[in-house]
Image 1 (tube, rainbow, N blue to C red):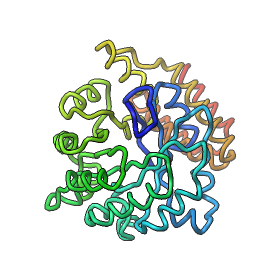
Image 2: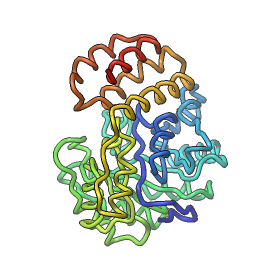
Image 3: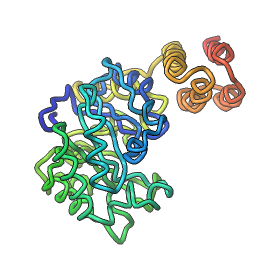
Image 4: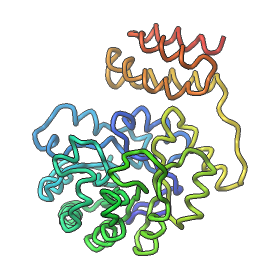
Length: 318
């Protein structure tokens, strides 16, 4: 699969997720075979005002490449200039967030609010493509609500203004993440445009991945919540697409080993205080379905040090 001149090793990508897809998590997913990872969404205005938090969001490691940076905003000039400002050899793709449903983003006319202004979407894509040579992609939703289903219109406008790929999440903004993703809208977008279309929404297993590809004809798939606490989903999907075989889930020992590595990477990047606290949500995902998982989550949420975390996690193997 190619995005512009960028050649990917396979068609399975990691979605940008706020509070999740930082560098440690991206590295783990890359090791499981994911072809392209995206940063958490980064505010173009925050870059412009040199908010120190954006520096951490933009940190990358050579081992995770290629990496896409997802920007959000609504001012074409600001988005373009900030993309140009941060452009470096470490960045392979610039993506524009047009799908975030969070009120504080939408109320600023950003994220999925852009689905209501297709003309502005075209202006944003054109402005960025005029400033950077890297491929520019967009991540959109089915529409803002059921009364304004316009993913096909938006995709055509993005393509006409230089977008090199389009990711379609099969839900409206009004749905947030509830209900069932409409994969047929992905099929409609794929039929309408000539650039790669990446399907997103309700991909929680290798079988789901095969189904969405077969149903929509999409060129690639983007895994979001299905990867939370489960970086192994990428190797499972890739193996199934090649062999139609379901490989075994990771053993408890592998899960524990990955949790501890994830924790060490987080602490190395963000320090023990923040790293341990951020690991709490990841551990709740990693241990979902395990015996005594509710007790584990309760105990982990009390932990404040790496040693305390290690003691609780080591107990999983007993």
